[in-house]
Image 1 (cartoon, rainbow, N blue to C red):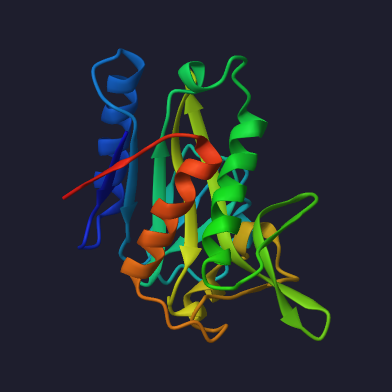
Image 2 (image 1 turned 90 degrees about the vertical axis):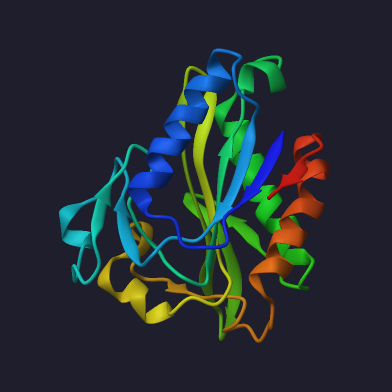
Length: 214
């Protein structure tokens, strides 16, 4: 297992090409599984369930993508983790729902490092936090694709992005809920802090050991 960290924003098209090459390599036993931690320049992605009406203001480039889900935003200050795993080798009976649960748990345990209580919501993808006054906001998104039982795409956690950038879309088709970040919750965490928390939480959820690579 490799854990790769990119310190400069990675263009979305570049990330897709690299992921697809890695997925193909994993499938054929020619490449190791990988977690890739990165940021993207400001952009919107449209998942396979995206509705045109949910693109409110095309202020950033829009990329059609093969992951599940609807519209989401990626940009500076948001940690994206692309996860490329071979579910056939990891699960006796490959189960995508189980894999999504693991991604959720990975986020929840990572947020707990910062004393933030992340929660699942029935019928809603992603991880949610209490926003006060009975409200709740989304702090992390999940969008996955599986090819020949090899996973790619993954998760994103809002560390300190410009939250106004989410205003150009209906995030994940859920316009009635807000979007938040660690910074908005008063958590002064750097991207490196979040990376360390992601690394620390990984093994306990996925029962695997990663090695950091430059």
